[in-house]
Length: 250
Image 1 (cartoon, one colour):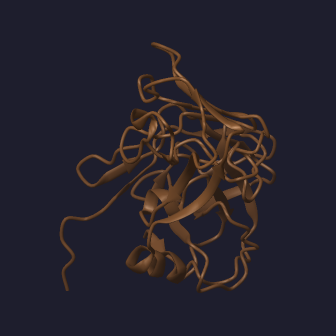
Image 2 (cartoon, rainbow, N blue to C red):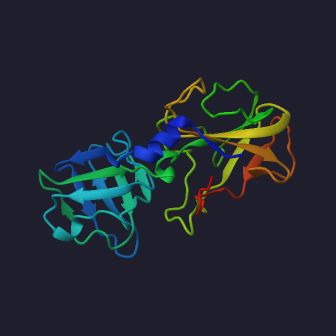
């Protein structure tokens, strides 16, 4: 059974959208790249350290060209490097260097997609605990990240992403990502924990956002072709989604 931690439920019920990173001043410039992705550059190479990440919603305000002040849907960051972020074509109306008060910022919302953005999936042996709040004592068999890369809390490089737009109450794994990992131990997969991007030592917590679920060859929350995990082998999750039910009943 899919179970949400107390921390995740509290955030879904009450979290407000917040600015998570911002850069202001003339070190910024925007570039119209015609049919290719437009870009915003920063001569101080500060986008990564300021917390900008692919999939974030971009806000740009205070620029001289009114059309360069973008926000909300459509201004989703496509790529991030230290000194340049990419956004969809035609969002930059005119190339310019930012005035002193020009700024770009990214916002983190309170949706399930935003809260769990750039997280990872941990696959364990044994039975799913009664609550994701409890400390994890099972044996870790496998960690699933984007392209099997090294996952670092607070960084986005190997974090798992969902598609931008939910459909019919469903959010799905990003079609452009490969969710995979190399097994670190052999055993029978019994359950998984999806943790968010922040530091989580998997101790007892009623604050940290976590999702747990069962694993099996059929009828489980996460179905796999063979539940016997072999150390050193690479495993891939081809499909993964969450559905918000239409009806909650007694």
